[in-house]
Image (cartoon, helix red, strand yellow):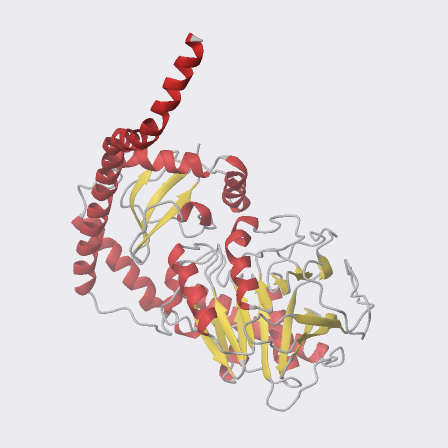
Length: 194
Length: 323
């Protein structure tokens, strides 16, 4: 009899719990969400600052338009790379991929490489270049003579969107943030692929 | 001076290839009036003698089949990307075609760099992905190295707005392939195939695998891999359920003619021998629905190692969504 009463009381509380619980849950998630939003905003701001600087430097060069002269394209790339490297001579790994941002990215990448979809992403990566160890540094020109590793398209759906001046590129296991026109490594996360 | 001597030597190679092949040539394309005529090459940019020989065949065939443009399926410049490489791996091999006004429309492969899009003779107009129209055919040139959400959204919008009868996509990594080295780009397929199905893309060209393969239609779309126009992995094509026809014994290139509702194709080896051919028929479009093509294979009994012979010689085949 007592047990029946207890169950009945519990049932009476259930609608109230159902009403209140999501509120608590969302409150509990809020700090985590805001931390994530803050980290991603930090990343977006630093990316934006880089692009602004790159555009300013680019404006000091004669604009690169489609040309039949391949030498012009190479000269432009070298000139822009020199200017950027000079302007960012004090740049260090972690300037854009800050510690917190790096951890966020590692989490996203780890998740993207899990499960059946993750197996496909890993296959995409391994298809072209079985993880070669290449020592990379900020302001290095990406090696042009080795084949590009396709950035897994399902991962690109999960990573923060980049402006067209930059791209996420894997070299071996490292995730690089690459300046497309200059061919420079802007920042990197070593051993990003688990 | 050595560069000039090399170029003279390679030009002689190309000329020799042309003259030797004149007797081997056999054109299966119908040369219909006002048709859209083009060639397709992939993984060609190595600057080796074989690239010049394939280019020589293209020149020779052009005298019979005056194609107006060429789809470059990526790996346009393999290895070095210095100005001399643009010369040795593109301008010199295809000089007779360039001089004749043939336009090349490139996509980037995994051996290319992004700035090749600024090279005017690749006609990318500074874009990593782009679209253009020839008569009733709309081409979508994609960057499969870096398939961003932005590119996918762009593709969807362009496919949606394309009123063209034929929609042809091309990019470097094949969504379906029986190649032993890379195989199918299955992850990329997850994202692209639904768009191809939704908007009725009839034909897709890719490279990457250094062989030629025609894949059985998949969900109504025909897939060709032509990744052997310079590079070759001899014997690298495994026979799978996907394979409709294939060739992995020598370099090759494709010729394509689109006339009304029919797309004719002919794949030719470095020595000028036809290794595959056929016709794909575009079904009449029903309002609001994607239009599925049907295939009618052409020549059979191919020389060299033909992995899977085209069946039903000369007979129309019913469209099968997932053959």
